[in-house]
Image 1 (cartoon, each protein chain N blue to C red):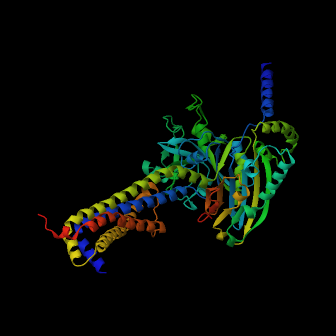
Image 2 (cartoon, helix red, strand yellow; image 1 turned 45 degrees about the horizontal axis):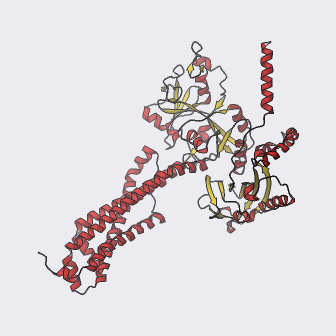
Image 3 (cartoon, rainbow over the protein chains, first blue to last red; image 1 turned 90 degrees about the vertical axis):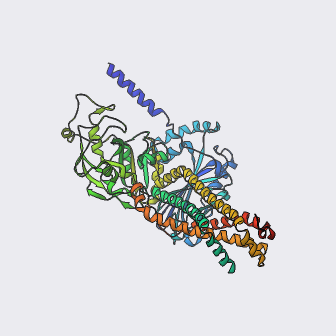
Length: 204
Length: 417
């Protein structure tokens, strides 16, 4: 009897644990975005994550037509990789692909893992959306834009610096934290609005 | 030209005081350049501690902390990484290789690290150098251990010696029922590996099989032979080094690990974390540079004082020059030239002293501190610094020069009693 009770309790415990929403929030700092750069051979992959506040100036869900238009315009602007990140001309780099999307930061991790295996959860996920909106109205939720770029360079050894048109395009962005990995290992940089150039001398 | 000859002759006639001044400035210049060399050397050695590893994975904490305990063996992990999570990461398609590390035990003050054979293949330092064995080889038995160079030399171990691992880092309880045998000794690397005792992951598990809550369970001891038959898959590790197949996938893998839903994990790029850590340590080096700059300033002021004091002795010399037709400005130019000469000779001598010092001290510094100081031609930066010293010398000598400028001709001609 006691065993059954214990088992029932255990079961109740586990279902409760499952029912509980994962309470795991990443850090989110307005004005500061993250840029990851990986260089291998002639290929360069870049990955930009920036708070909604930096890109469109607001983080509430797009309620009006105007908001939606701004988000649409921002995503288009984020896709113009050659304007946002100007690589040294003599390296002859071309943009192979550029993708941008808007993520709700509190769902970022879910969205990330929602590739294929979690699809059955999607309904449940959508149900939650209403609740999330309420959260966002409380001003607690954050949104993030994420963009991924691929460049191909004819002379990658010629890359000396990256000029950040990013700060001109998005006037609310103040700083990018850059992680770079190349043949010479990994390094970190900070690029600020008032000095929007990343000197890559000796880093590639 | 006549000025130069006169200045040199005048300096030579006062060779004792001038010589001492030159020596003082030269020493301060050598000190400054030496600090600069040690600083850049230390930074390079520091950055060279680990290379060719794309990610370090551990429990979620801070990137610097993870780097400190996983690479430098300083401090402790806040949490372990469960073996299941480790397996999950190892199975990811981006992962080329993964090396587990299990820390927490010690041997006479040196940290013990459980790992696999892959560590010897994958751990790289100083721009891709692999670990070398000075003696012996990898683990061939469950109770084999490989020692870092410093552990072996400081404790006087040789191949085949028995080693008893202590439980925890500062404890008196020892795993004395299961001694290890030294199967290999690594060559000196100048990295924290030199101060590490390496055993296999299974070895770590084996010595803890019959332990519970920090003590051996009384009456339940498992003998060293019996443990060999047991399943020694660990339940957790402390951290792991990861290499990816393509560098372009590093960040995706990093994000996936950082957002791993089953367990709070952290993946860091070693180079970025090293830089962050150096940024913290770097404050001390700025202070060091400040102090050595002050030493130079003191030496230059000493030179100004020397010239100043010399003015009185040289009343006659100045007066004769003036009587022969040299103007006020000529006297000033002479004094500035003297100071510039002193500073130039000092800078050259200081550089020479530095290189001599480096040449003598380098092997010792490398052996004692694992600090590799490269001997190379002075950088633009250093040349600029030497020029600045000369310019500063000319500047401070303006004080005595102006004084000389004001001295009247009569002042030098009258004979004081």
